[in-house]
Image (tube, rainbow, N blue to C red):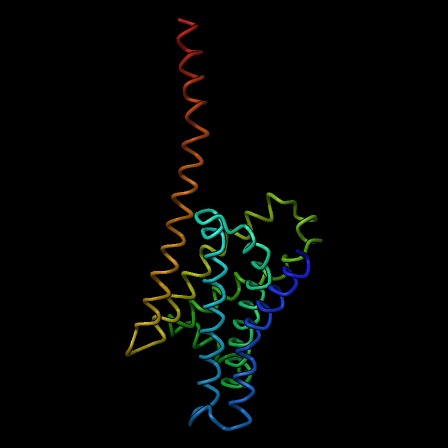
Amino acid sequence: MFARSSLVYWIVWLGCASPVGFVAYWLVTDHLGANPINTGMRFLGVWGLRFLVIGLALRPLRDLLGWAWVMRYRRTIGLFGLFYVFAHVSTYVGLDRFFDLPAIWADIVKRPYITLGMLGFLMLMPLGITSTNDMIKRLGPRNWRRLHKLVYVIVPLGVLHYFLLVKSDVTWPLFYAVLTFTFLGVRVWQAYGRRHRTEGPRSVAVNLNSESTT
């Protein structure tokens, strides 16, 4: 069992790391086109969004299909999503704007898709910083879970950022939007079901108590 799970982990890890290999190959073979910075930046951002969407899908897969094993790889997938988003933002800041802070601030203020993207990125960073077991202990499981619920805001922000960025063919942004809101809908439905099941017995007990006092 250990060998099998280790093999799956390395398959997941290599799959998550494979986009880096594509970027390196395209750089070496000069296949990034006339605007390599923009091409690479968009490629990294899209893969960051893909891994965040995949991470969002794991809990519904576990609950609906009984695939408990997928949760073992949620942290790895989420951290790779953060890595690609960080690389995406770093490419924009360092290679596209050459660390020109006034120009970057002007973009954030004037361009809504950059505003939303930066907001999502700033919200994503604390999730990566607190992803270790030590940070879970320091924050406490309840506070840690509350903090990491930000992902339910971050992923829609990323989808909207991508949608506003793409000016012609919005097929892929809409595809990720459908996936994201489907997974979020499943989570809301599950939360409502759990709340309904727990509040049902409580309401019956309250009614019985009120009847006994009359």
